[in-house]
Image (tube, rainbow, N blue to C red; front, side, top):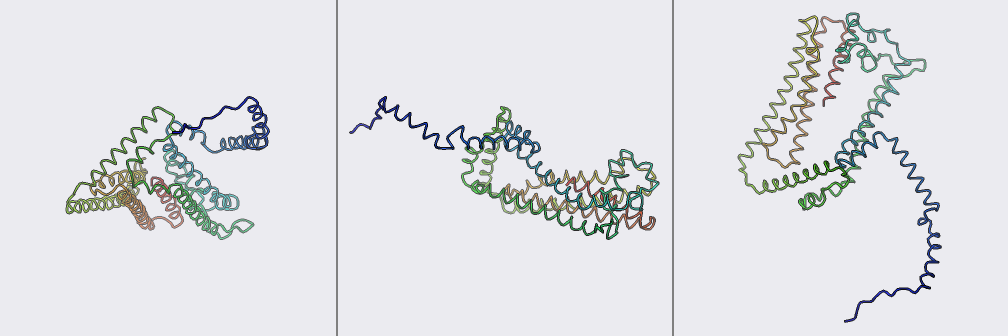
Length: 384
């Protein structure tokens, strides 16, 4: 056999010849010259980028969290920052076209009945429990719909506030819908390879599950434990697929689970209606309500929205669906729960309004309706 070719060392003169030609070649290439124009532009771009990053809200803190606990934990705070940015844009839209025109050109505070605090509520307008429930001066402010008048045009310029109120509401809905679709489309483009998770499950979880941005030993231990748990869950899932469950037993368990869910939904709707009716009776019987009796409706609604989803998760274990299918059923049931609670709350408040209409004048009634309903609706939607 022939020996493999060997590299022959260069002569000293040849080395000097090549070494003299290299600096000129390097200098002729602008990207390889550290002191060239491209190097300066890159350094300048890097400095400008670092300056811009310092102005991004909580960017440095999120990067610090990401370096200690990985990208999975940091993504939660990035999502919260994204929601905060959307709320800032919506606040600017509403404030610029609805709130500011009303404050600058609308009727001032105290000139109309809807903008004046009743004398019987004036003494407690600055109490802590009143402010906590957005009553008092906050109830008769631009935060609530009842503060705005029904005049078609306001100010010397003839600004059409009712039309602006309607158009801003449509613009807020359209902006939220468009920005959500864009974010979903961007995330779908970034996760095109997620469909391959169904094949070679254990290979993906063993070789591709580690987060290389983790720099904290404690976070590394937590991530390792999470990977081990995921692998165990995958093993259990594969074992469950091989089990033969009786079809009759499976159908019976799923029917039982759906019955329990329907009973939970009906119970939550009845409880909300009962609490609103009870608050109405207490207002008629007692001249002064306690702090619990004033906030009973909002507290009950918040407890239902917190406890019911956890109960649905326990019931879902009886159905023995695939985790992805179980998640879809869970989301649908929670959505029905929130809608049912919201509509039952609206119906109960409307019944309360009808019972009060015989004893209260129309003007005071409208302000009371809008203030009470807006407060409870805000607390309910916030808890959702």
